[in-house]
Amino acid sequence: QMIDRAYDYLGSSYVVGASGKPSQGADCSGLVMYCYAQVGVSVPHGATSIMYYSGVSVPREDLKPGDVICYDYGTYCGHVAIYVGDGTVIHASSTRGQVVYGNLDMMGIMDIKRIIQ
Image 1 (cartoon, one colour):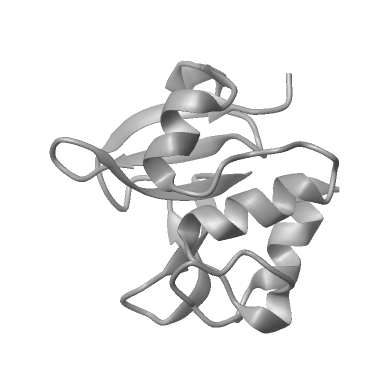
Image 2 (cartoon, rainbow, N blue to C red):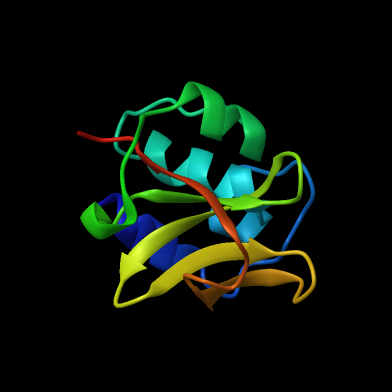
């Protein structure tokens, strides 16, 4: 159900700080925050906050759809995405200006978080 919410967001605008309905757009952490809220799970806004304060870390070999990928921006987590399977994530891309599919390995991965056990 949570992943279905991510699919609903595809094509929505990238909007800094937004975390509302797909028609309002979202930033990367706002997308994660909104999708999890739809299944009653609270997640903070902010990629670094999600990495440090949400869920539990899981190894890559245990990766499952719905896990949150935390991407490495050098010294901090600067981007998050939702894993949907087959090496693919859904994320709010600032460079593309919208919510899109991406490759799991589009950037270095800092952590993988399982929010729903």
